Length: 544
Image (spheres, helix red, strand yellow):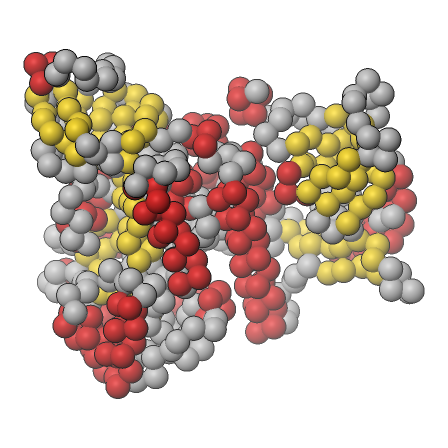
């Protein structure tokens, strides 16, 4: 077994864990009578992975751990999400419940009134000027913040005009945070923004700029000593030529995702998107230029933005870092030792005596091929083994997906209010007001849907989809349908007895199935429904 300590491969081939800490490194002689022995033959043992840029949703710490991510660093969430997730982590640390990734948080980020990311999180406290800096920072400390997040983004990188903090306010926020020993992470989207916040003393850039930096801008940023969370995997929110989101195109990751998350990603792949999605080339070039100029680069995903899943997407981020020009071992350091150093996590990120036993055992050697991190054999959080099957179907999974759905609906509504020309979901009703179905915009056109959200035919034009709903929206409900509970492989034919927006009552057409005469109710979160029998993908048959 190879041991990667966060920066290099060690000579040691064995490791001993006692009470959640690494007690010894060496060869087989470190074993003691009564030890439980784990065969790591042919594999590589890594420090638990650290995602330096996430936003929280319920259950995300358990989800992250199933993919070998043992620490997540939140870069803007609100206390109503932070507090229960933190409580769940502490409960798990006490040995009650399945292991979860540990978390650190900025709590609410500092932004101008109406500034980014108001569209996703409002209402929350704003910063109106330098005088607000100290009370704002101390309020975040009271909420448990371990670092301060500030947002400097006037929208110019996306041809928008939105309110943003000014330089004097950024300086005041940095001073207030440093006064309390908090590192400062700054959201910027442009090269000019990166230079400005670096000169004002922030410690970490939350993203690689999306426009190409000049050599002078790279030097200006590098000489300040600021670190960079690259978040190159943001482009994974856009499907490839095959219409599949990148994380689902990785067989090892797709197979480890729960059926509900695969369904979420399938829906995100067909959402409405602007033409000509970004290719991320400028961000990759900026990342390697800054890295070669001495800037410490950290791996972070920005999950759960579209196409990004806690835990799974960090493996994609490692691939993006290597594509940008980092060596595989350097990319691994960006997800282990480097974020631990930057955020003061002195007890993790390294395989060494005394460190937390946050460990990931993978097949193969990811120090030569970074995709090897996807071949997860086992993860331990503080010495406790993670069981992937504990997450699928859990209350945390259900709550997290429901939270994400509600958040997405809120963001879409806010976007349409601000930019009425952007297409959004539409209800289709008869003249008497009865709901016939819905239309939803996708990347390829418009999808007609039943009243309970099942697809009616193929993606077409708006007028054709509207005609489909008017002609068949209700009559389709009398047809036989195909359904399968989430997590099962085979589809079975059913008749719809009653439908509601969030649940359906069905009877199986197979008379040999034991079922109530009036049928059985299913929550739509628990089943998949189709008018025509779908073909089961190989990745699902492999699990079944």
